[in-house]
Amino acid sequence: MDDAFARELTVRSLLKSKGYEFDHENQYWVREWTTNQGFEKVLEVALKTEDGEWNKLMMTTSGQVFYAETISGGIE
Image 1 (cartoon, rainbow, N blue to C red):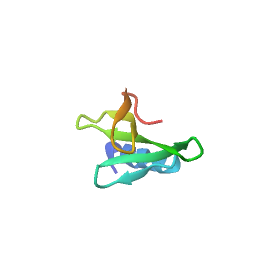
Image 2 (tube, helix red, strand yellow):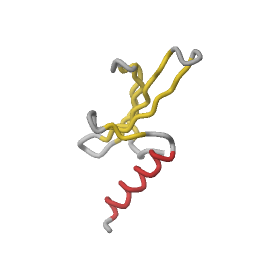
Image 3 (cartoon, rainbow, N blue to C red):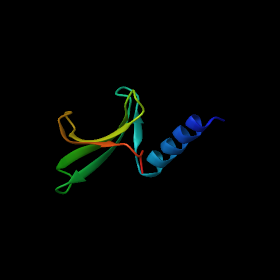
Image 4 (cartoon, rainbow, N blue to C red):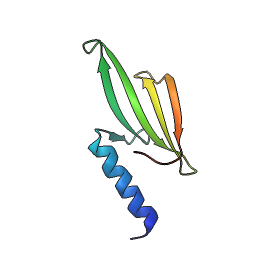
């Protein structure tokens, strides 16, 4: 197994362990947060870019991004 493939498997396992699920339609990892006794929902998205970097996004369920961060060291 080459190193890149092993790293990818490790990241997938880590994301699953943190409650993320892969969204096949949008091609990103996502988990949902609720607040205000379940009345408000926010999506936390982990997205791997074409150049191999990871971005973390916070967005509404309608897709409006209100926070974005590039994670150059990888997903933790």
